[in-house]
Image 1 (cartoon, rainbow, N blue to C red):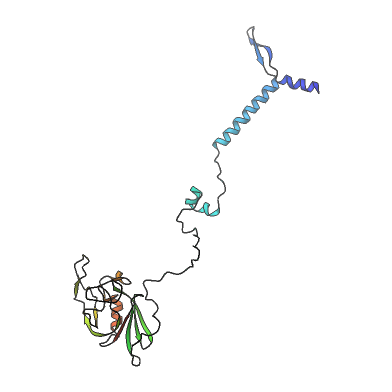
Image 2: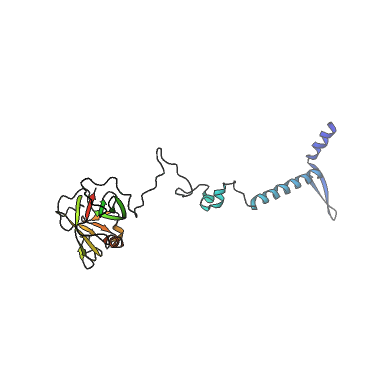
Length: 255
């Protein structure tokens, strides 16, 4: 055991030796044991190779979920975007998945027939629901057609001329007039509008003058509160309704 330790200690002992440099010139040098020098050289080479491999080889990032590997915005940040349609948002407590109403289609007809409405057999009549922005053509108690409409820009029953409210009650058709050449200034800064009432004006008999069912020059206004009190329809819908409209036809307007 002692001999082994002595040999091991000798590997790290620095010894002086004379080295022949040629032409009779000798130089004294201090050297480690030859085996120790070999081990040192091997260790230095190993460390150098290891450092080079680590420095120039691509580093692998931690494994990301499958969604992160397929979506670049997640792959770069490791997180989904704040407004990503693919990331479900927890519903608030008590909320339910309710489909929003389709504002391009009329709403289902109201409930029971209006009180005080006297009908004879299968006569046609018109029912307008302001809160549903819808007009229904009835035959007796059955709905034959339904259309989306626009109403007066102010809420409630009409109280006076110029209050921009659509009147409520049971009325009748006074006349059906060709309105294709009519113009009107809606006082919205656009000036006089030609064909502002569409092809027809179904004038209603009531104490208020100038209230009727008509077409429009602004189809995007249907389904809104925008008129001066009249009921607006898409022009093509008005053409269809006009086929059934007649003088003295009953018209019910409800909130």
